Amino acid sequence: MKRLYRSKKERMLGGVCAGLGEHLDDQTVIRLIRAVVTVLSLGTGIVVYIFAWILIAEEDTAGSAPPSPKSGGIT
Image (cartoon, rainbow, N blue to C red; front, side):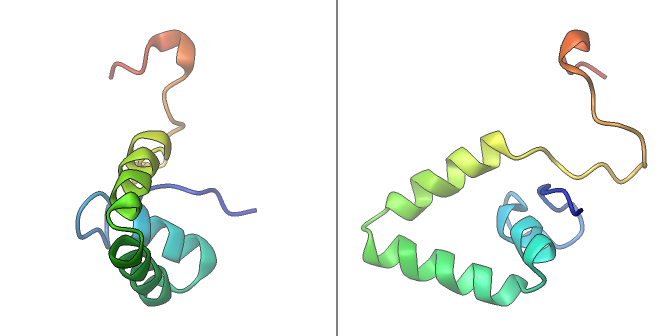
């Protein structure tokens, strides 16, 4: 099963849309949907993007496990 991460390779800003696109196999559609939602919702899409940026973990390109909560996330 694929895990959802913010992309480090294909990012434009925070990697949220690229990560969702990799997870769902279509980055372009995700970016278009985000743009339309942002324009039509008068900025609510920006707030949702920021929350997703905070909540979705960044991709681990080194292949090691993400930091555990017990370590405080400090590397």
